[in-house]
Length: 446
Image (cartoon, rainbow, N blue to C red; front, side, top):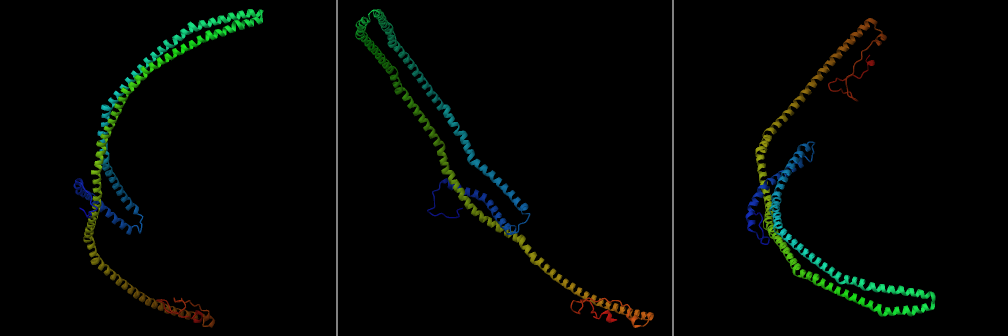
C-alpha cells in the first residue's frame, strides 16, 4: 500500500504492533475515505457547474431549489458526523477513564483509607491522647506538690514569724513609744528644757541604741532568715520542677515522643511512597506505555493511512467519474448526438428550406394579387371616370335645353368636383396602383 518509498534516512524503527495494524487500518480507512472522496469530488464538480451556470446568472429560485436542500443535506451530514464523533470520543476517552475512575481510582484509595490509613491514624491519635493524659496527670501532681511545698515551707513559716515574733515586738515598741510619749508630755508641761533633755537623753538615744543594737540586728536576722528560707524553698522548688517535670518531659520527648514521631513519619512516608508507587506503576506508567506504544503508533498509522487512502480514493473517484462519463456519453450523449445530427438537423434544414420556399411563394402570390388588384382598380376607376364624364355631358345638354344656350347660363352651370388621385409629394408620379391625374383646375376645365 506504500505509494512513496522512504529513503534510508527517513526510515524509523517500527514495532510489531505497527506492522500488524498497518494493513487493516489502511483497508478500513480506505473503505471509509473512498465514499467521502467521491462525495467531495461530486461536490466540486457540482460547484464548478453551478459557478459556470447559475452564479453567472443568479436566478430567483436558487435559494429554494439549491441552497435549502444542500443546507439540509449538509446539516444531516454534520449531525451524523457529530453523532459518530461523540460516540467515538466516548468509546475512546470517556468510557475507559470512567471505568478506571469507578473501578480503580475510587475503590483503591477508599480501601486503603478504611483498611490501612484510618486504623493507623486512629491508633496514632489514641497514643497521642494517652501521652497527653499522662503528661497532664504528671503536671497536675507536680503542681500540687509545688503548691504544698510553697505553702508548708514558705507561707506557713512566714505567717508564724509574723504572728509570733514581729507582731509582739511591734506591739512592745508601740507600748514603749506610747509610754515615752506620755512621760514626755507630762514632763514637757513642767519643764521644756528638761523635757527636751530627757527626750534627747532618755528617749532618742536609747531608741537609737535600741534600734542599732536590737531592732536592726533582729530585722537583719529576720531578713536573712526569710532570704534563706525563700532561697531554700526556691532551690527546692527548682530542684523539684527540674527533677519531677523537666527531666521526665525531656526523657519522654527523647525516648517516647521522638521515636513515636519518627515512626509515624516513617509510616506516613512509607504510605505516601506506596501511594506514589501505586499511582506511578498502576496509572501513569500504563498510560504512558499505552500512549507511546499504542495510541501514538495507531494515530500515526491512521494519519498516514488517511493520506494514502485520500490519494487512492482520488484515483478511484477519477476512474469512477471517467466510467460514469463514458456510460453517460454512450447511453445518452452519443444517441442524442446521433438524433441531433441525423434527425433533428436534416429535419430543421428541410423545415427551414420549406419555410423559405413558402415565404417566397407567398410573397410572389401577394405581389401578383397586388398587381392584378391595381390593374382592376385602375380599370374600374377609368370606367367610373368615363361614366361621370358621360353623365356630366348629359346633364349639361339637359341644362342647355331647359335654360338656354347663353354664355352666362353656361358659365353658371354647376360642375361636380373631380376627386384627385393619390400621388407622391413633389412629383407627378402616382402611388402604387393609382392612375395619373391631370393638373388642370375645374375653372379652366370649364
